[in-house]
Length: 67
Image (cartoon, rainbow, N blue to C red; front, side):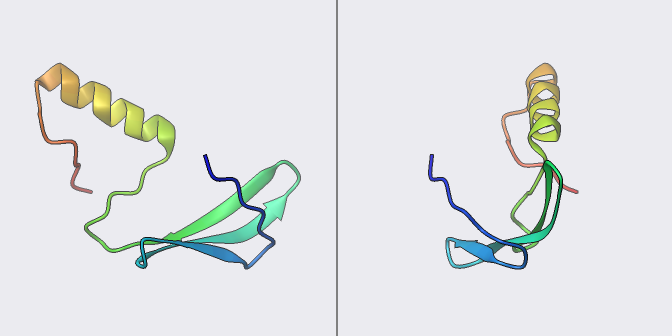
């Protein structure tokens, strides 16, 4: 795992087309903004896990979700 330190309004870039921006830091919470192409699914981890469970239950083989 790569660990980076960023301040408010600073960002990181992933694969030339995904940008993660620190929008706000309040107490123990950090708000992040994600700029990614529309075809790249972006989910909170717990939502991603729920989608995976749903896909497994339905026998789906495609890991992408329209949204």
